[in-house]
Length: 324
Length: 257
Image 1 (cartoon, one colour):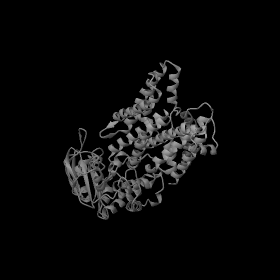
Image 2 (image 1 turned 90 degrees about the vertical axis):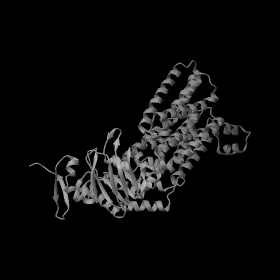
Image 3 (image 1 turned 45 degrees about the vertical axis):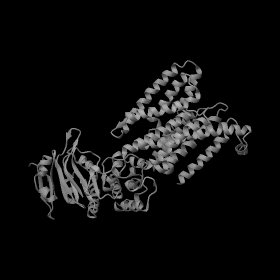
Image 4 (image 1 turned 60 degrees about the horizontal axis):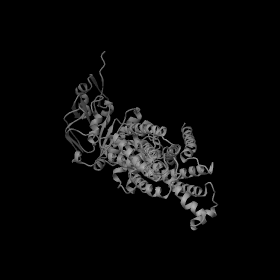
């Protein structure tokens, strides 16, 4: 419980930092004033740019954190992330094709969402065994389908006729919330919310599944049904995240590991902890990306990789030292 | 009580043991014996619904296993598999608490007083209370086995099926595990336990159920089974029974001079 309180406070602090930070830094008093005055420049920046952006980043990061916790528990594999189901590759491929075909930018997140879900469904069907899902087959199917779709993205990039299209595709691949706002939030948040509720509802079966399918079944878990619900929740969360921010790497992989240290491995605490940690890490990384070379931006995915991966490797090294 | 009527075991098209009929009364400790690959694990899995059987019936306390829901089954029978666990974040108490899954309603995530009492009693029974906060993967093989047994005890199922619970354990730990199981059977739990060591089985079990090539050979008290020639037909080697000073029989492979 203490871990969840600390993570909630950390998310609030990250959100405040995210609202203050940008090409133009706000003083705290200016930020407070902007919340009450709707016709100042600061209010415009707050309501039209920073607040929606923070929500976008928080929902994407939190969704990936929860998706990672679900899939790592389901597959009993600490090295998988929610993109393993092919969601990101499917979304990126559809968006790349959409950009080249000249589809209007506002329609791209919805296309990415549907394609991501569709790809996850294909991967899940390929991994079907009996009434449930074969963990090894899911990994092989996910990696194979993702590799195939990545090849398609490369072909599309090579044949993109103009620089703008190439830039737009690369921006999705690098993971950036730039240009996303309230309409995208309204479209993606309901799906992320359904995924989150489903994840919390599946927390007890997930705890039992970590002991192995056979043991879970003998404890009274309907393993097949639980696997499908957990996979559906992961796919909804990952598709919502991809539609908001493109391909954000590493969040889904590292957040559950750090969250486990804070609240233990019980899924009922781990799922909200992963959501809070994913959100706060992503908000902070985005704040760094917006300010480090302002007025230009470094994509969120790049910042997360630069800061998140060394931090994760340090944690692993420290764990090995303490266990030795 | 477990009642098995004309059960045929098979994996795919491979026939294992056929026409198994036996009744194991409440509180009896039965050791399951037979050569490697004969179908002991498949038999145990069949008795808890993890392996579907083409013919035959299994009744748990009078209820037909084939029509029981997964949830109802978990209230009747606990099964301890031999495969290990790789989630290094799980604590000993987490593993034991998982045994309460079937007792908890889905909208309640916190443990009820009944859950806590059952978990603590199970930890106490296997003397693992001091290890409650330890990571499961840091335990020795014997300690892990005790945790799995505690998980099954927390499940509070009247029937306990175990697949080689003393495999890879030294003689002291194996003795402690089997003593614990015998205590549980004396307290009313029906125990069916696959064991490879014939003398270990004879020392602790009330009866020994022996599988041979594609058929059940016998289910008899230890002295009766060890004195007969069923072991030779099951394992394909001659056996030499030896009478101990306390009057109990033990058996060893007969060596040619």
